[in-house]
Length: 72
View (cartoon, rainbow, N blue to C red):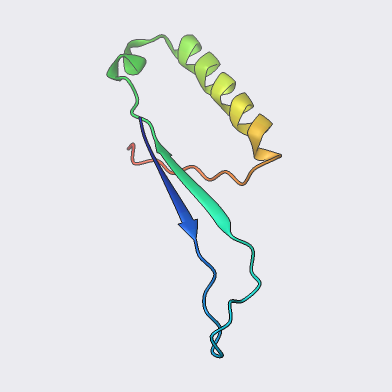
């Protein structure tokens, strides 16, 4: 797993003063799916997907989460 954190800095206004925009913290996390996942039974994979979605939904209420997949 690799994690990267990026912090956006407020832009300078034309007169040289900083704008009053709040900072935004962005964190990227990359996960690799174990190839043995494909060897599990359909029922086990379904249960795993449901558990992962439950975790995602739990944190989605308090944080802005976006997922992206390169699988396919």
